[in-house]
Image 1 (cartoon, rainbow, N blue to C red):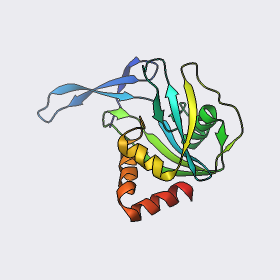
Image 2 (cartoon, helix red, strand yellow):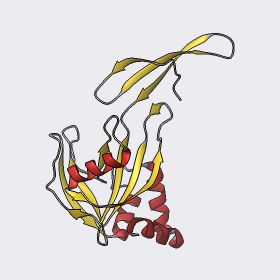
Image 3 (cartoon, rainbow, N blue to C red):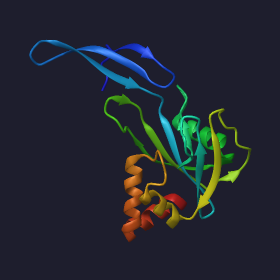
Length: 185
């Protein structure tokens, strides 16, 4: 997506802007741009037959919102290591049963991958270690309620293809059982 000749022209807290000269088909040259941001992890975490979701407040949001546990993966950090760290920090939960659901690039002009993981059989091993800008209350919901919440759009920031998979599971019995098995093992 980004030329090997791309140069960083701005680096913010989350986004970095790159530009490069791109030769066009008519022989002229145009300046192209792309963004880079840290990869992120979203985690479908289970405790028994329940799925852990978060009711979250952040300073730039006027209302609480529901989300899956997850967040930014540190530069140079392995994706699974980052997902495990985010789950532990935000929930105090851990498990050894992890599976990568998908790794998707949601936007063409942004060098960014969302890694979706399933973390089965989570158990509390620590207290939450939240960032200064986070207030997170943990909620546990059953599989059917989780699918209903996704279908209604109650969960913010859920990766779009994951949302489609989960909505399909609500209406397609065969797909529902495949998704239930993927989540709970």
